Length: 161
Length: 261
Image 1 (cartoon, rainbow over the protein chains, first blue to last red):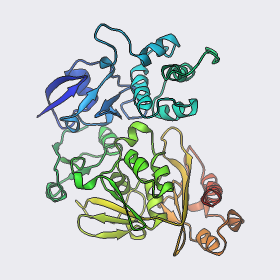
Image 2 (cartoon, each protein chain N blue to C red; image 1 turned 60 degrees about the horizontal axis):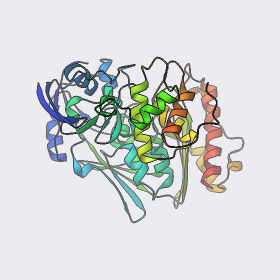
Image 3 (tube, rainbow over the protein chains, first blue to last red; image 1 turned 120 degrees about the horizontal axis):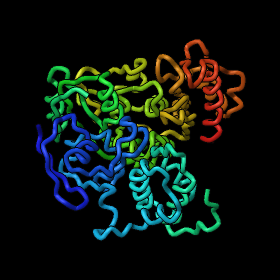
């Protein structure tokens, strides 16, 4: 076992892990942060996307020991402490950007990474950026609309589908 | 996956020493290796992470060549290799954004997946693969599907790409894997045109010498009229037949030449 220490959503987090412990398992099983979802476990689906040192990564395809000393952000850290949703989460709610909700944590974390680098993305930019996030409900239209809305762009003309 | 020992050295020398352990493997970004280990298709006794080695990260531009550290991520190459736009563009279309934030150039080249993008870029550019022990020309490095000139425990510390006069990479995306169904990298250099094809051959990445000869005559898509690769040696699977892949090689080479100008 190896002792790892990282900052998760601004709080110090420590634990003993095996070499093979995935970051996703550490977050879910040891820290109880089950908002990070395991969809495919093969780095295809993106439900497990978290940020490590500010960059979106698939936490099912990174070892917990590789995140030793890192700043990690998960979906649990996105809303304010009183539960007020951040702009991206609120846009998902306002625009029906989720159906079953399973992919949503990864979608929100990917969207957050996109808007940090590209504050006013086009629809094509958004679809390209979400290429590694799969919505099995196939609800992409409203996910893209939500991210456009979160970036402050007018989505009134886009039909709800 | 099976349990293993983990080590994260901070220098190339320490990594080379750590890799002397029996059944030890180097870990780049893990975007292929960790998935392979989950399927128990690989079971190293020890993983030696290269991600803590500062001297193996970064992109620099020196005298007509772009040099990239072996542990540099695809995202960092996409952002930093502006002096070689076709290379930066290729790196920016590998996998998806989260994969590009972890996967590394050294990992991709060492793995030599027959459908990976980097082998085509390195071979077409006439790149030099720099290891802890020696320098290997791309023409000698790729030795068939998942096979390279690397010795046991040898680490790719960097890759040097001479910047060509013109270049372009055309990738026909396999949308589920996000690898190339077929990809063609064309580079026009002072020493002639080089055409490297990935995703197509059962032997892995290869140079299409017939197309190179035609393009050395006239660098235009029209010069490729009537040329084709032998379909028998192509990969045939559920995503595309041998004949389809052979057809794509011709189409994508023409597109790459047209786009390279």
